[in-house]
Image (tube, rainbow over all chains, first blue to last red; front, side, top):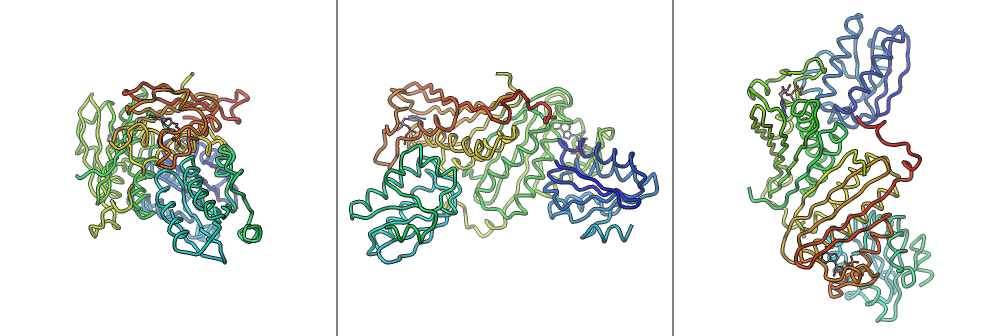
Length: 111
Length: 111
Length: 153
Length: 153
Ligand SMILES: Nc1ncnc2c1ncn2[C@@H]1O[C@H](COP(=O)(O)OP(=O)(O)O)[C@@H](O)[C@H]1O
Ligand SMILES: Nc1ncnc2c1ncn2[C@@H]1O[C@H](COP(=O)(O)OP(=O)(O)O)[C@@H](O)[C@H]1O
């Protein structure tokens, strides 16, 4: 798993590369939480363009991040998830709380 | 395994795509032998650009084709084999009887 | 089931083997030429079942997970087995959102994902003995009775 | 050997499983982050050993091939086992160009390829009982005692 982050205004943007499962969930969680703690941000955008696989362990960790961001009045958005990831999102109903965009700029504009 | 062939002058040129192992060796052998029998050719060029894997079963079937072509006074050449394939060629000493070229046209010119 | 081919894979319940388990099972199933989406479904379902054996079945102690895959002319049957702590109430466990480990940020969607991505999911479990999940999936390309024997050596 | 992880794979001796065996073993070994060339070496060696069990070990009848892979902080140990007809004279069998099946266009280079592509190759065989090939390979990236535990969960 390869993670990078940048801050744009009050938004933390994380790029996720690799596979998000139970094995990598902790690394993902710690990375995002550090970004949320160390920066004066409100919203979280996850760029999933290079996320090749995700299962329900990913759903669990995404809901956890959603709760954190929600507490500070922010929103979570995902960008460009592939079909496999999107199907897991759909099954779990996560699109009800996390919106999906086709590009980072569209997500930034909408937040 | 995906095989295509064409005839240029007295040369049969076969393109090999996929993996050449014991499982696919028979298909490869039958395809090349049919090409050698049905066309008035002397030489054989194997374009290995898209051969992703080969083991010693491939060496056995190549030596078999070499013997057939050699009987009619022709030569066998290979083109553009990858590193894994080339290492199997080296170990087995097959470069002593089958020359390698970086392009089909170079092989055609040299035969 | 008229089994044409099968494999059996044993791995210790380490989280780094989740990726290996799903890749190996998908590599085996790919002998039947499924679509990319069907393969992704299998990877996802296997990942769920294997992760459950690691987190819930064996919890903190290490045990062996056995993955069996059988194929016939229609598709695959995949079995994921552990000899871990077992499930007391399978019906409850299969409910969407039910998880016994919310503190680990589990979503409780594992079984729901398996059921959605595969055609059939059977769960057999006994408290203290272990759990077996059997999942079946037919591949669209094999639906017209085209069989697979023509491609196999 | 200080085993960090292992896997065991059982497959029937069908030729279409040769590709699966090498892909699965390479997928497992890739946990140690070998180079592309090291992975290709492993694929090639496993392909040779599994093919031998199919062609020579079980000849025309079908049997089970067991592939075990163990990893430690230096690299992998791969075992390919069959309960087939066995080898009478292992030393002769290992000679380059020796084959008992020239009529099948075998090159007699299988053991030589295994020896070249792996660091060590042990062959244990008993006539009528079966054959075990054990191959070891250290990965260059692990040579400086960097271990693997840091990447594993
Ligand atoms: N292999 C298993 N061994 C023991 N318990 C299990 C196993 N698989 C599932 N369970 C139980 O079923 C529950 C629901 O599983 P699942 O739907 O995958 O959700 P999650 O893994 O997110 O908890 C788990 O929380 C656990 O209590
Ligand atoms: N698993 C096996 N069971 C029985 N005999 C074997 C086995 N592996 C190898 N042999 C014997 O060793 C010989 C040499 O093997 P190898 O170097 O791989 O060459 P090839 O497979 O081309 O014959 C084989 O021809 C066979 O007689």
